[in-house]
Length: 119
Image (cartoon, rainbow, N blue to C red; front, side):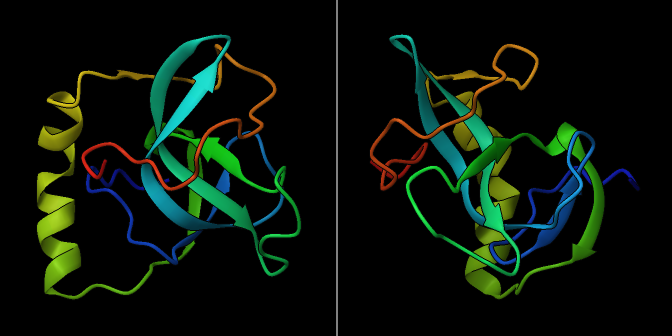
């Protein structure tokens, strides 16, 4: 993957280093609970083109887990502001960044409306 430090916009389609199916980004800075510990992943995504089929459809991963960007999502002025402030927002959130190496079963167990900085 070409190094891109900016958070990807909603609608971006990617392949992770560990995966082989396209995933479409549907959320950024998503909170995740694992055995009582709450942290965040940079992204949550759904399989493309299927989308949401049940509560276990979401995949959670971080920017460094991306192997390839297939499609870069829509950007407007609101997205530009969000992307420019993302790293500062998560740094000030008080939540720890979770990683795929810590967790092998990334099944959502939280309120999917919660995201870092948007509670």
